[in-house]
Amino acid sequence: MSDDPYAALGLTKDATTEEIKKAYRKIARTSHPDLNPGDKASEARFKAASAAYDLLRDPQTRARFDRGEIDATGAERPERQFYRDYAGAADNPYRGQRGFEDHGDASDIFAEFLRQRGQGGGEWSSQGFSARGSDLRYALEVPFMDAAKGGTTRITLPAGGTLDVKIPEGTADGQTIRLRSKGGPGFGDGPPGDALVTLTVREHPVFQRDGDDILVSLPITLDEAVLGGKVEAPTIDGPVSLTVPKGASSGQMLRLRGRGVKKRGSKARGDQRVELRIVAPPKIDDELTDFMEQWRKTHRYDPRKGMSA
Image 1: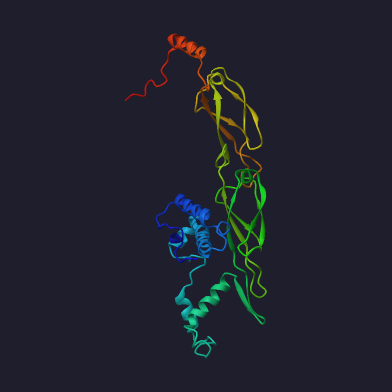
Image 2 (image 1 turned 45 degrees about the horizontal axis):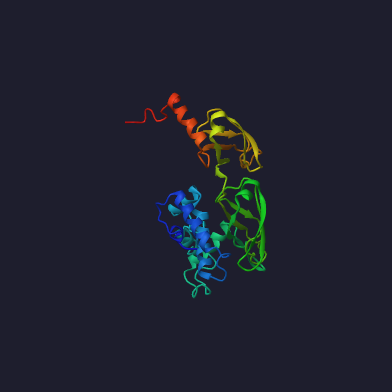
């Protein structure tokens, strides 16, 4: 990936967390390999943006990168002077021998060797070098209900294979799922890497999400607002009966306990918040007009009282 993850997202270092998320989602929606088959430039841009987002979305990891403690891949930055001293030490059996003279500074070779050993990334054996395979990153847009209720979807990999991805119940927008051993092949006897799938949740025409709560705007009639009564309200589990209080107003919020999405790491669920919205009749006839005119004469009130400066 790029040495500058901010540049990979088209941002600067002072970008907010929300700006980082929006920039990644924009690139994922335009440059994903599934949407641009055979377009190497789009694929490279998507992979760079995915790697950058994985690094910057976590505030602690982002802070470590900004301080120069890790590089753009998330690897620890080697203390080069330490390795230079190690390579030049008198008790180093490879010091000054042929074999390094045409391959650059010996300290760089020791730096890379010890960095990989320190990360558990590989080891030398009599059979050669073994290392864990690289992690592969993907982006996947999932329907709102699959994220809320859970499900399984199949994605097509750039190389032509397929991968089944299980969407956990209560998955949030921007969440990354790790699929063990579904990444790049290992080297030698090393194990394969993992597949990291970052999810973008598609918008729903009725439901919105706020944390573990579901938000719904529910239209009600004029008479339902005045007289109250039972109405049908949609939820992610199907329609339920909701009591509208007598004299309800537009914007009034009602709560359905336990009708939200499953909380992460818990069996409990959030709530559904229902905002009432009074809708006038599609046609105002003479009967309603006459009634309201008479009602206004004897029941006039000012809901905007006290708003003037």
